[in-house]
Length: 113
Image 1 (cartoon, helix red, strand yellow):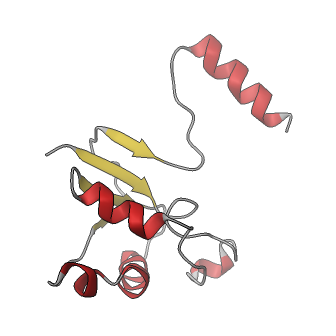
Image 2 (image 1 turned 45 degrees about the horizontal axis):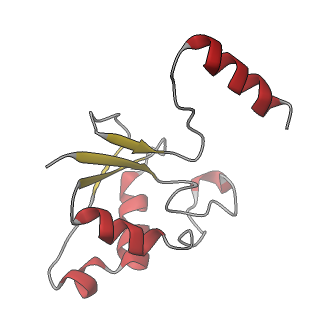
């Protein structure tokens, strides 16, 4: 089964409170719960975060995604701060690399906004 990696803040968690001393107080991004379960049908879904307390991320996800209720069994997603090999990465701050000319122009155009 192919793997897909989802960034936590800004992709699953709305990050509306910013870093806030590491507290996770936001809500799920609209559609993220449904998308997560849809992706689980085809991919091994991994959640990646720069946060150091992975238990906090897991607890937030268990609360908001209600895995046991939706799946009928206890499920804990893979949550890591290590970049796993994957077929796709979904990140709100990602830039798709093609070549350096294209990438540097894209960065410059985004900096101006």
